[in-house]
Image (cartoon, rainbow, N blue to C red; front, top):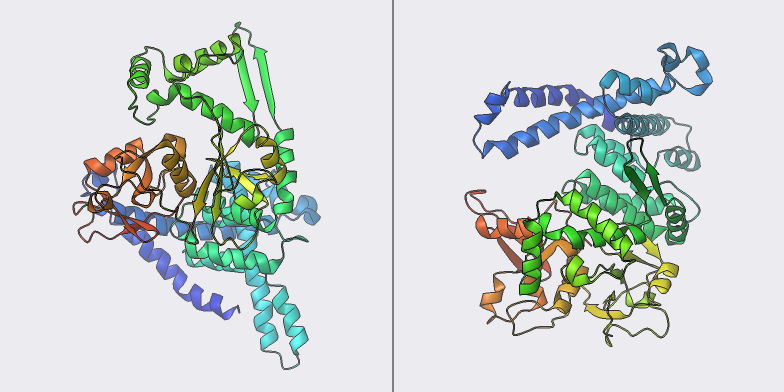
Length: 501
C-alpha cells in the first residue's frame, strides 16, 4: 500500500501500452483484413483489443480526473471547464470525446478515485521514511488511503476496465453507519477475485447484492423510493395517435414483463411447447402477419377491454402470468408452511432454505430481477399466495427428488429456477421463464433417472447451440462445467457455469 508500487508500475506502463497497440495493429487495418482472419484468431484478437482499450481507458481516467481537479468549484471562472465555456467536467469531456454523458461521468469518478488513492499512498510512503513518525501517526496516514484503493490499482495495471471499476464503486456504495470500510473492503476483495470472469453488468449486480446483504435495513427505503417513482403517462399526439410512457417498480414491472412474455413468447425465442394445444397456439402466433410489437399493443387493448378476465388459453396460450418470489425459510412469517412441508398454491412463492444457513435472511428476491425486496413486501405477497418448499443442502445443491420420467416435472423445473437463476450459459441473461431443462450426460449413465442434480436450465437458443455444436455439460459434485467441442477449443478446457442466483 505504498507509492513505490506506482513508481515500479509506471516504468513499464508506457512499454505495455506500446506493445498492446502493436498487437492490435498486426490484426489488420481494414474490415477486409479482419474478415480474412481465421476463426481461431478472433477470440485472441478481441482480447488483445480489450487489453489495449483498458490501458487507454486508464489514461483517459487520469486525464478526466486532472480536468475535474483543475475545474474545482472554488476556482470559479478561472477553472479549466469555465474557461472552455462548459458547466461541468463531464460536459467538456463528452464534447471532446464524443462519448455519452454516462461515460464521461464514469471517467471522472474512476479517475478521481485513482488520483485520491495515489495521493494517499504517497503520503504513507513519505511517512514511512520519516524518522519522527510513531505508530499512531502512521495509523492516521494509513487511514487516509480510501477503501477503494484495490479498485484503483486494478485499473492502473489494466486488469480491470473502467466500466467494471465504476460498477463496483457504484454497486458497493459509500461508507455509512451500518456499512463500515472494513465490511466494504471484505466485499471488494471477493468482487475483485471474480471480476475477471464477469462483464460490467454482472459485476454491478454482484456488487449491488453484496451491498444489500450488508445494508438490509436500507432495502425497504430503496424499495419505497422505486415505488414512489412509478408513473404511467397516456397522452394524445397531434395526429390523433395515443402514446404510453411509464415506469414501474420491480414488483409490478416484473408482472408486466411476465404478461407480455406470455403473450409473445413464440415470437421471441421462448421455450418450445410440448402440449399440443399450446403448440397449436404458438404456431398461430408465429404465423401471425403482425409484428411482435403490434401483437403486444393489440393484446394490451384486449386486456383492458375485458378488464383482466381474459381466457388464459386464448391470450396466453395456457400460461397465466405470475411473479415468483424467492425467500429463505427463515424469512417466512409465522404460520406459513416450511420447506419440509410444502403447500400447493396456484401461483407460488418459492422457499429455498440451505440446510445449515448461518444467518436469517431479512430480504427476498423477485425471480429474474436483481433488486431485493423487503421482509414487509414478502409478508404482503404471501398473504394471497402459498409456498412451495425447495430445500437446498449446505453446498447450495437441491436435495435429490428423482423421477423415473425422462422429462423434468413442473416442480423440479421450479426448483431448478431457484438454484440456477436462469440460463446457465456464460453471459446469458435469460430468466428462468425463458429456459428449458437440459439433461447432462450423467442422465444416461444413471439409468435414466431424472434427478435435479443432473439437469440445468438453458434458454432455447443456447440449448440448441449446445446440441447442434456438440458442447457438453458436466457435473462435478455441485459444480457444473461446459466443455467445448474440439473445433472450438482443441484443448477442450472446461468453462465454469456458476449459478446466476
